[in-house]
View (spheres, rainbow, N blue to C red):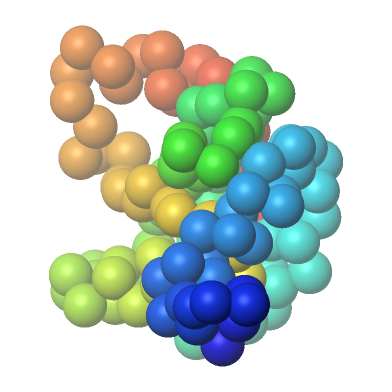
Length: 121
């Protein structure tokens, strides 16, 4: 728990502070971190493909923006598996993640997101 002179902050504040420290995290750093975890992501979550998109790809990442992640699995998955992967990635990167499958993208954003997405796994 992070403590100041007058208060102690719960874990949610600590995560926010970590994200503040990483607000200048570069795309290459995100890719490197995710690639080092490839074996676990494939074995534990059955990830077939993982891409990043959005502000992190454009170099606009900051504490108030989420890292966009598109994921495809090797076999049909349940919502809880997707949620578990999201929590794992958030802990790994120290920031909030917006996660989804390519087929779940809204039609008006799909082409743009797929065009700018960078495959990591």
